[in-house]
Amino acid sequence: MNPHLSRAISEFTRITNLLLNDFVENEYVCKIKPVPLTETQLSILKIIKLSKQIEVGKIAELTQISHAAASKNIDKLVQSKLVTRKITARDRRRTNVSLLRTGEKIVEEYEAIRRKKQKIAFATFSEREKQQFLNLLRKCITQCLTLKTSLDPICVKCDGSIVNECVLGRDQVKCRFLS
Image (cartoon, rainbow, N blue to C red):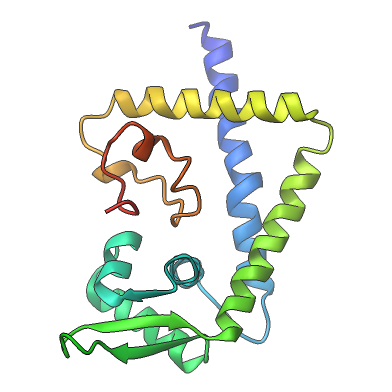
């Protein structure tokens, strides 16, 4: 590949990622009031919203943090009245976490901001161009994944939000959200 083209693709990919994801998440996490959240805590809230109810150990696995770190983050979310914990009936050593209405509202607000920013970013794209962009992204991700021998270091961290469209699942590669 032409070195100039390769460098341009790398830079535009990095910038796109910053603008469409990190920028929205960081802006939302920094501006949210009255509950200050870390990106990890926001990620945990999004996972719980998708799962309705989930064990702490599964949250640790999905977010790729230790069980202790997941518990500490959940402690803070409980203190902030965003989630609730309940010991499971079948095994008292396990704890299920579920969202309270306030936690649900935070995830919904985040999603609304993300959609608004995405709408602005793609305002000049036709529906055909949006679909073409999506297809090219899928093709690129699929190609990158075929070059990897182990998926552990490259989780796409979708928080399960694209589980039905994710190339990890479609290509029958084990996605942490599909297990």
